[in-house]
Length: 198
Image (cartoon, rainbow, N blue to C red):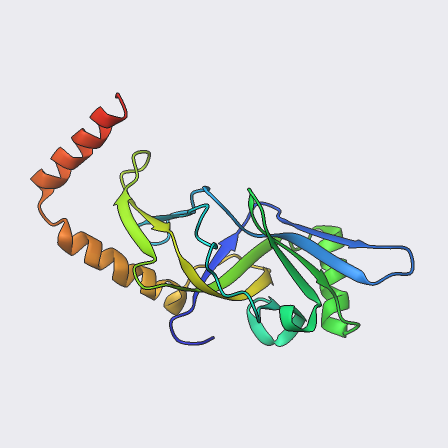
């Protein structure tokens, strides 16, 4: 995985396996959904803005298994991976190659053994911002401008680990340094609540 690439996983049964009579095997689903909160990613929560993909480079995205480049399923430049941004998020359709790992994946998807999606991305400069999440009290990171989509992946274990979250944690540390004054943060939270009429 290239330096600077972040990976996020969608866990909501976002995948389907299907095939047409005597046609190719295909999988489809949502690699990301707008406006839904992530799990706790190690001290912060994340959400993707509806406009985050407005200027995203999706010219050469790969579909992979577990973000493993040796297990490629499709590619936009080969027209075996189709991406579509709609009101829900980023939908993908992959025409599977006739390889052993793709056939095994198809069967596991059909049986429900695998049901999670993920995506790799690069953020534009100043492409995210932090606020305080009113529900949890944790910092809420909003992804507002994804500069490049590197891959969509079918994953066995949804995970946010090591370097995948390190960039986001650096951004979180910057946010926390700017907001070290607990009294100021308390006042800002009270102002937010007043604006919301609470």
